[in-house]
Length: 179
Image (cartoon, rainbow, N blue to C red; front, side, top):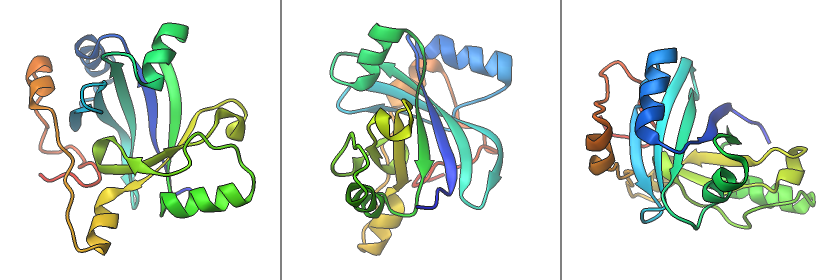
């Protein structure tokens, strides 16, 4: 496997509005993509950090669990707010899952699935990375183009309205996002 980029750092938060204001005030970071994920399970915001590379930008992924049913909910109630996972951009998540399964690497997910921000995702078991929850990601857009289809992620206008955030014109686009 060749990791192309530390795609994002997943951070579980209690209050998305407060945290977005805090990250903008303290670090000058603004979200480029906000959505409600998993039929109302999570509110998610992506904040790009630093300069981009040929593979994109590393991002902070803020995750606010809205109800039980996710590992983020469990994390928040067991550990409080904080870093939950590291996500690594790879060329093809499914190919990497097959390769890792053949190596006997502990897996959290046996198959990939559509994730937030227009990405195909799969989680590893924390034992695979010495106690760190790892996520493999690759753009859904690439997969859809190969199949002759286009899939655009859905943003939550309701959440964006609640936090009063507009995408700045100079912000880097998310994989699969349309400007």
